[in-house]
Amino acid sequence: MADNLLFPRLHQLGVKRLVGDLAHLRSDLPFERLQELEEFIYYAGSGGRRITLAELRQRRNQMLEVAAAFGFPGPSTQAQRAAFDARCAAWLIENEVVPGGEALRNDVWAFVTTCLLPDVSMWRFGDATAERFQGGVRNTFQRLWMRGRALDRGEGHDARWALLNALTEDALVGITERPSIGADPILARAIAEAWVETAAEVGSGVMEDVARKAVRNIRLVSEVVYLAALGEAQAKSVATAQFRRAAEALASKA
Picture 1 (cartoon, one colour):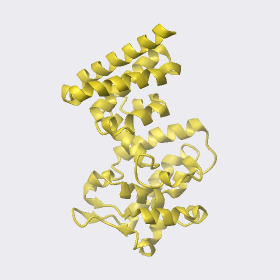
Picture 2 (cartoon, rainbow, N blue to C red; picture 1 turned 90 degrees about the horizontal axis):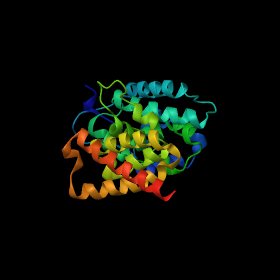
Picture 3 (cartoon, rainbow, N blue to C red; picture 1 turned 135 degrees about the vertical axis):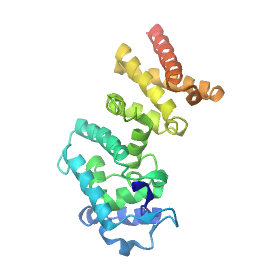
């Protein structure tokens, strides 16, 4: 089982040290020389076995195949990068690339991005700022794992990952990077489904204003009612009603 694997964890000082020389980072992958980074690398004390170098290489090679389908390592269009994000988010969940509780650790994702896949990160964002390598909601791969976890319709669904492709980048960020929403998959999916349905009715051009008002009202409702406890269908019904009201209010002002 993959869930007993313990990933290396990269201290923030290690991220800073490695990102300080992007040219070197691009040409000399740190995960191949972990012994040189001992002062910055650590593991959970118990709970499984440490992932091997061969298993890390396997994950890297699989990711390179995913990225290559969207232009890596050459130039890419904005549409290709958006499609990569959607596919990568799904791939991270489908394959439990970072398993179990390890996926909840910022320092694990710092290792994945900075040591294992820095070239893919730089291809995706250019010579990006440190926030794309450090753990957190802006990390190149952690943000995609968060999207996949929040917007997964389930293994048996005919369009399991359709929400990842249907939502705009702004919508994805607004849903999955707000802890009060993104940490609750039922609420996140309810808002995402309502966003997609409303956009089909009123057009995506006005959705930023509609979503801003609707999500604010949904968050107010959730202060009183724990929407996730109502179940998928009822949570979606509440979200859809708020999106419709917001769209109607916006139309009345036009």
